[in-house]
Amino acid sequence: MANTDLYRIPATLDEPEKMAFWTIDEFIILIGGFMVGILFSRFVEGIIAGFIGVYAIKKFKRGESLNILRYALYWVAPSGIFSFKRTLHSFKRDLAG
Image 1 (tube, rainbow, N blue to C red):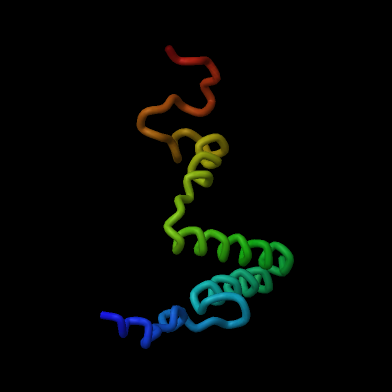
Image 2: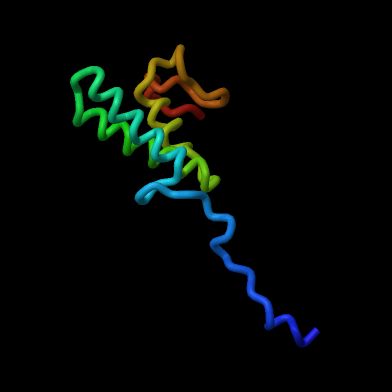
């Protein structure tokens, strides 16, 4: 059992292939945002949408929740479209209880 230090397994063996700073799926989302921006003649908005998409997919792949997006949609979207089961509608500002 003393010979376990003789072998080393590299930690980067299972890392995905990267293009620049992003993995392939992140790069596709980034380029997709650029292309949509070019298609609609809104290049800056396309760049911003691409980076927001990359940020969201990175959070999703790390296993962190995107609950902050849900909470923002709760306050901004109409209550018929987006609502939680156990909360009041967002337009009701009175305290319950």
